[in-house]
Length: 66
Image (cartoon, rainbow, N blue to C red; front, side, top):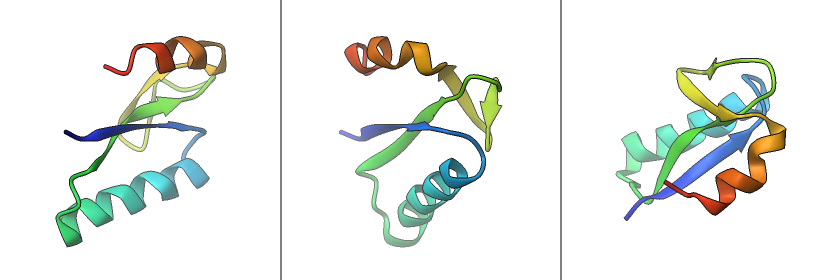
């Protein structure tokens, strides 16, 4: 079962983290981690991933991992 990662941030450092996870998935077959999306207060999509909510939604997102 994949562990879903929610990245807090935007295209800068958050984009680097998402790229590292995807690179590991492609290059090494590391399917343990999967980017579920981002938490961002200003955008609806970051680096092609959905924004799952804003910073005020973090606690609720952690309660509902799906």
